[in-house]
Length: 620
Image 1 (cartoon, rainbow, N blue to C red):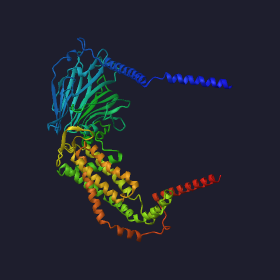
Image 2 (cartoon, rainbow, N blue to C red):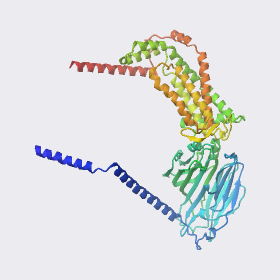
Image 3 (cartoon, helix red, strand yellow):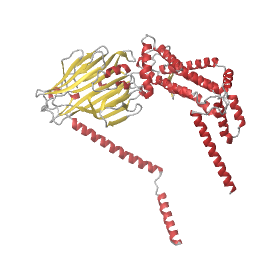
Image 4 (cartoon, rainbow, N blue to C red):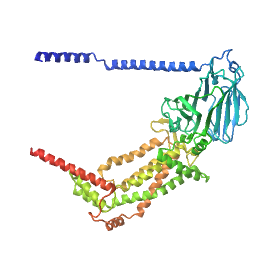
């Protein structure tokens, strides 16, 4: 290629690049184009959703004209039937043949009236059945309540051909469980033999049951359990809609302390679940919807069997309800009470809950119960606390020797030698720098267990202690009308006390480790002071019972540390270390110390290789 050709190609390339830059759209034009693309995408999505809705409507629409077998049931007067036992009262409406109100007798709302889970238009339940010539949508029809007792009722939908569709409800004694069987009788000609499923459209607006909206929201979610798998849930903090490919054992419209659970013996299929946020101050937390299918036998030979649970999220109550459910399934309803990650959940299930129930059975106030639980837990972990303290005390006793090593190697390039001599010193006195970490690590799951347990303990709900009127919500002894960012409109006194004890604990810990004059630890010291401030803003909306527990735990920790310091004479401890001192060559490092020494030797070897390479490079 000659020079002229090369120059020609370069000029052509420059023209192309320049033309592209000149014609590049401005930022405003790109924004308009992106907005146009987003609008097109949104329109397409809306059209797709509209088409799906039309398909569902076309599939489910029932033509109730004068020729319909259920024309007589399209008009009527709404009547109500009440079922109740010792713990729950349910109101049924003949319009749709469903539960329209659920009242829990043993719990009160914030006005100290019997707690109502839902009522009136809060909830709806629609069963859809596809017929040969027309469909049945139960929410549009008036049933007849027959065979009604205090614990059972049959909602019957009569057809003109003499057949009928029965919804049989039975409230189990002294339980929050309700049995439901759906059975078609004499309606073989109405349905096609190919029909195997019914559609279920279940909706509910979850009421705000507790004092603190933000805290309750963290524990309010649409929860579901896939068959042969662990439970899952939709987001608590944003709108979410999800189509579940797996079959489901149950779907729960869950609040922090109460749930409405819908279970199917033959499972739910093709479920589309949706959870929408409700505005604060509306009186509601979430708007739930579940659109799904389940088994239906049009011949009536095999009824469809379902169950409801309208009750508290109380661990042992839910556990007992499993035994009242379908025999071939372990519903694992107790998962509605979230007790933490697997190891923490085990601690809560087998230790914390039983300890809490034992103390509660004594008739003590919930504040005293939390205090006693905290003391018992502190006593149980005391051996590990003592071991961690002694390890730190030994490190402090050897600090004069460590300071001499630091003075011996002031240069940065001697950091490896300084570290080696320091580790050799610890090995000589049989002191492990990590000796205090493992005991503290062992304690962590126990303290974390109570962090998960307290906000989910319904026993703390509306229980007062000292100035806190409700241990399950924030205590607002100090409050104001104006909303302050990050703080809100109140100051939780238990949260403030918890934050102060955390600061004191941090100061004591830093003094214990003698971190005060070490400039390298300055950032860590500041972080330790900032953390309690962060905790204050986070926990100010949390349950006062949780802040109270952390306050008591921190206070006991301070007292325990003070007693341990009084019991320990560091001069005697150093003398004991000197007496048990080992010859440097008489004790080979093991475990973590051996790994650290091996790492140091490897670093030393690499450093020597680099130095030799530098020398060779300099000679060249």
